[in-house]
Length: 118
Image (cartoon, rainbow, N blue to C red):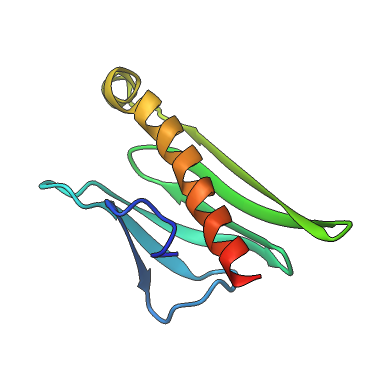
């Protein structure tokens, strides 16, 4: 993950590194006040891992891949809700467009790495 996540995003396992259901992680932004979210793997099967999180926003990050002929289709669904109106306003004002661009860049980095491993 360190090779394709945003370099400003730190992902630490809480306990042993695992993607088994129940495994926990902490994601933090590498900025001075380091806002963070704890998440937990809530679904796991071959080709699927889904994390759920709660904190300054609540949601899930689901990664699923499907075989298509001789290729693989990767579907990433990141859903969230920001319940605090002040945090929602700040996100909309400052981070919404940055987040969209970052997620596109993240998928491009992942695609590059996957193609390199072929």
